[in-house]
Amino acid sequence: MTQRAPLSHVRKGIAPLCMAVLILAGCGSGDADTAVVDDDPIGALNVIPNPRVVSGDRGHLHFDSGSRIAVSAETQAIGELLATSLRPATGWAWEVALGEPAAADIVLRLDQAHGDLGEEGYLLVVDEREATVRAATPAGVFYGAQTLLQLLPTEIERPSVADAMVWRVPMVTIEDSPRFEWRGTMLDVARHFFDADEVKRLIDLVARYKINRFHIHLTDDAGWRIEIRSWPDLTTIGATTDHSGGPGGYYTQEQFADIVAYAQARFVTIVPELDMPGHINAALASYAELNESGERTELTPTVPFGSTSLWIDGPDTDRFVDDVVREVAALVPGPDFHIGGDEALATSEEDYVAFIARAQEIVESHGKTMMGWAEIGRANLDPPFLAQHWLLLEDALAARDQGARIIASPARRAYLDMKYDESTPIGLSWAGFIDVRVAYEWDPVLEELVEADVIGLEAPLWTETIDEVADIDFMMFPRLLGYAEIGWSPRDRRNWEEYRARLAQHGPRLDARGVAFFRSPLVDWPAR
Ligand code: TNX
Image 1 (cartoon, rainbow, N blue to C red):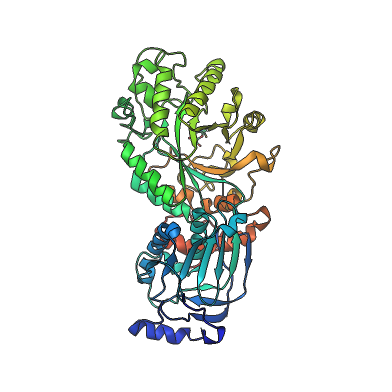
Image 2 (tube, rainbow, N blue to C red):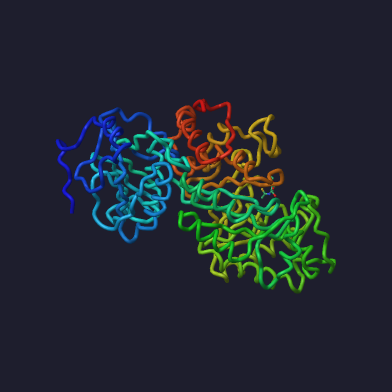
């Protein structure tokens, strides 16, 4: 083991010299037993979501071209991901090395002594020798690494080498763990389809902010977006258009499994949604036997809202639901399966109640827990199940009273498809305008709920008006950073004025990553 450098050997205050040498010959190395540090005030950390406990006030640890990522077998994959984030801007090798760290290394350690930090917590210590993340779980190590990335200069996000940089991080100790278990976002790929690469890019972006659920709204009136082998016309017919009459699209099961694996490596669980018994025209247009009329409907880009329903008593309906749930459930490792259940205005109440109870049995028979929009609280259900509150709190309360846990997605606060203000060129406004402040200043433990009722929050992006990646970027960012903070940070660590200042510093980070975010006038973004 390399000996820890006594403080007196630490090369203090020579960063400028080091920089000059670095350009010519490389400076420092992971083999040395000293690291470069300085004594500067550490300044504002600007980490989002705001960590729970932070201490440290002076000095920085400097990385160098020999800095490595020291891992164990359990943290190696996380080390590789971190290296992938560090290499482009630094131009350094960032070797991921099993074994003991040297000076100026990053250390990723799984350590059961930190079980008190929970399933996702971590301890990050940057001292005069190295930067170490310790956690009891790989997820915790991953989150510590995300925080460390945010402690580096903004330029770390650049896709190519940033010249003349001092790559340093403040000497801090951060002890951190999330408030909520469910910190999610949702993308509607049914109204407009986004391919696997586009979804993976988003997963990468949101994972940086410790979002851990990515709900994909896979089916709606406008399209069915996931291959079902036992009902192939769902995609050969049902995926062929979209809400604007465009070409549509769908994921093969291999492509979907690839998204799932990509997300899993970033500690993001994909939550699939097949919306039933309403919002179902794409299926009704694909198979006559799902319709009470016995005939296929027309697949038109827009059908009147709330006008479609599965034929609840139809002889093939049960088999249909069982097949689609089975095939999709087999593609996801996560425990939760979303069956929609919203706005089933064309289904009688009696049929709705019967259908949702049956759906719960089917979902459970495939090893999953049912999740639905809060209307499912109108049916008679047994725990465990999850109800996603979006409109009427009374539905969520009815679900809670039957033992559901609540995911808070109140449309007035959390809908990413709502316009920021009257000048927003895309989006809807039926739930009001949601500027960056309105998106940030609310709490998932809504009135009449208590903390234990709420598993967390989710910010959905419906895509009736959104058909390009740049539009997703614009509606999702920067609001998503606020939702990430609401989901992670203790309530008493959230304050709009202070958040606003931190958020400003994420503008250049998002720019460097090519995110076409909305430059909200409520935030003093640094000049470009
Ligand atoms: C309501 S939220 C819907 C969606 C729309 C959205 C538009 C929910 C469960 N249903 O079908 O896309 O409003 O904001």
